[in-house]
Image 1 (spheres, rainbow, N blue to C red):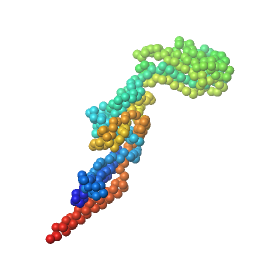
Image 2: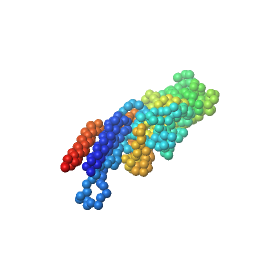
Image 3: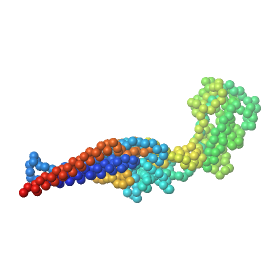
Image 4: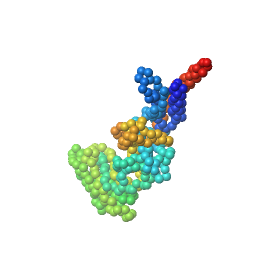
Length: 405
């Protein structure tokens, strides 16, 4: 029986070396999780009492992956993504779903995010206006199309008008700076994304009272009359927000007139004894924009950046987790598939539930510790040698028995 026991020990040591060798071979494989050979003793069916049973060797019961965190290494490539914590990327290949910790991604010719094997990264799609719609994960596809322009509908201007200003002598004339006290300008956009320069002229007409005139691309608005009035109290403050509605007649084919609400907030519009100054100038329109880049946040949201300064969410990477990750079945290409032992995937957004966060421009290195593997290799070698000695000794015993005559 010693031969059988020793042979099982040799096989076990050889299989252990196979596992160790595979770990060492994948020490530089991104997202690789080292395996651990697990053995169990073997007993033959016997009617003998438990105190006299002798085992007949050992067998490999399982090779369990160890899902400990690998080191995060920055790469500078915005398409590289590392998972910091639990979870797996959910990949799709022809409808077959696999799971991976390897975040070496790239864009294919159709704008889909793929790994080196061509599997599609899945996630939650974005709506037309850039909102994320959590639902059944689908392959993540980045839109390379331009975003449509948005006409200006609201604008806001915060400023200080100099209370020391005097009433101009002559009637307002846009070409004569002596007929108004201060001026500023802002850019607004029409329905086709064309920009227009709105110039505003402030002329005091009495104590604490200012008339506001406007031109668009050099043309007077409101037939040369003020588009509104700003009134201040003796403390140089307005009682409430003031909203004016400039209307610009267009002849370039865009929707005409271009009318929007221009608000002067009471909290940030003043008339103090200080020089004229604009503290805030904003409007909500923009021209068309081309995709100039994108970024991936820790929550997995992929945000596109456009040449017009706008940003828009294009989707969100989904992560899958399992009650028993060690029950996953390993495939080639740094992939796993679910089994009955792993349970069904728990799918959600990064940084939610038990899912880890994402780090773009980085990769998770293999969690193989070379030093540990080398020590394990020496131990496995000693075990192999010891089992070989068992066979050698049993052979000598058998030879001695055969020599008895």
